[in-house]
Length: 152
Image (cartoon, rainbow, N blue to C red; front, side, top):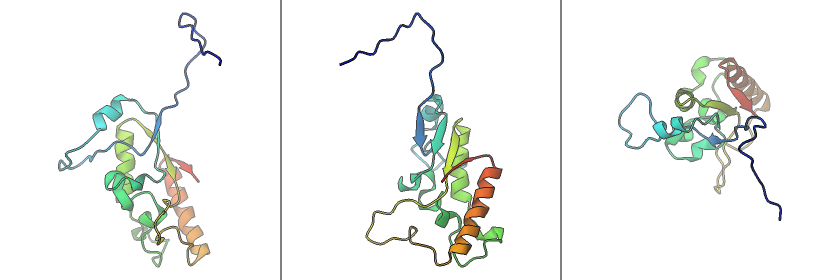
């Protein structure tokens, strides 16, 4: 077995930051009815990056089932994708803004949370693939416009 040795007297370059999270801190920015928050500790950890992949599996934290997934942001597939009122960004925006407030950049996963249950709700194929592509492309442009990195 090899031994890993460090010579702390010799400088050989910077360490690459590898710490990141899936989802940001547990915190509500505008209300005081939450008895649990890890915002101060999360911010103190100086975590550089977070991704929101399947982060809505964390219950009500990070917006719960109302954040990040395409079916959460565009909840009514029969709505007009060209109408801004067809989109619901409230919980997604809040979870990303809390993460940014902590000094962490977000890699946005554009897709659907995995469903292990016997019945699928959001991971079923769309009834209109062309419309799905329009919705997806509009979301992609919005996400890029606000400066997030998209994970596909």
